[in-house]
Image (spheres, helix red, strand yellow):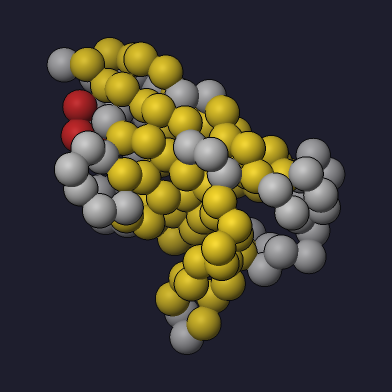
Length: 120
């Protein structure tokens, strides 16, 4: 499967964006998917994950502000981002992975990334 992320852009602090991750094939059988982000000069970090049963998990920094979802019929995963902060500025990547022992492990399947810039 190939992934393509979109929906990034420039937004003011407090604003909202919705990122999309479109898969080239069916995501119905994919056990888990996630969103990562990488800010300039920082390591890539896991932001949110979702399993094929709809179980979600979030980094503390985005909890209660971001919502991850997936539409298996459209082969698309989403990241709804509200109350955006300048520290949310990063390139956001979507990913296919799996859950083992309660932790998310990424496969080497990535979208190309979409830039989110939050101005203060």
